[in-house]
Amino acid sequence: MRHDTDRPSIPWMANLRWGIGWGLAIATLFSVYVAALDATRGSAPFDRLGVSLGAVVALYMCGGFVSGAIVGALRPFGATRGGAILVGIIATLPVSAGALFVLNDMASKGSAIVIVGYAVLMGSFMGNWVWKRRSRVAAP
Image (tube, helix red, strand yellow):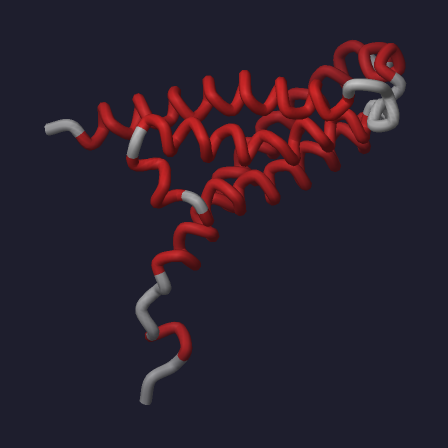
């Protein structure tokens, strides 16, 4: 008798799990960093920006989950440099929008430009960096 756990993994589902896992792992590292910052410097760095530690951690976790899901779903497109950069840009959009939301700056003029600009800059950088690391590992 076969059980559900005996079925071979569906490739897109495995990619989705992979992406979410990495997204949450990175979010956890960032969360540990800001918790350590809060423990050593108090709330001053957060107060200066008008945010709380909890809001920043929630942003990291939600952003890690959503962006990780995007990266996992689009993982096959990351085989080329251009595809990896495009995936990076798309995956960075929810994080940059979330950051502006947490900073209560979504209504400001030009917030869409900031969101897209940040996503293009950081997403391009991260997509290219991941592609270079991946191609180095894959090289014989």
